[in-house]
Length: 195
Image (tube, rainbow, N blue to C red; front, side, top):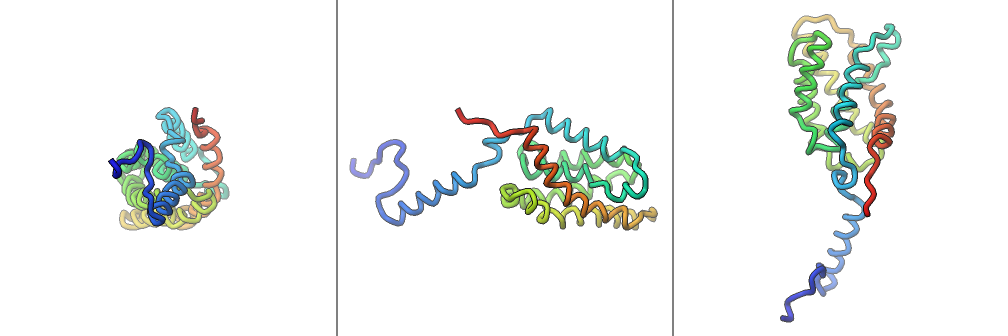
């Protein structure tokens, strides 16, 4: 019976196992799982997607159109980072097809660009999710650049005239708007209180 430990006792008696146990408890305190304390509801995801689609279709004058952030990729990347179990690459592809229909682009262009760049965002989600919003913005800057490049490349392959400034300027404005989106979403979806 000497080998048995009381229920709830998880650490060993040696110095090495005690320090490993302490380190694992510290990791659990410093890096809680987002899915445990911040569960996004399906209506919140749907409302944010619809709002992003509406904001991407609002007509703006040419000087302001250059400054419009890429709303749909921003929302897709947000949900891929925060709740990858509820919002996956299939949702990104479907949303890309919807965006293709709404904008009149080649069917599958946005779906392809969102899926490829979204895959990379999903791969780095476990690391980037816990960073401050401004660091997330800098880490996601290449992903928005990749999305813009893929759309520009598809336009070139299909012989569509696409202004490079209209494709690549939103990369910077999206990076600037990311902390604002994170603030609004954390206000709309506050962490749950543990009882």
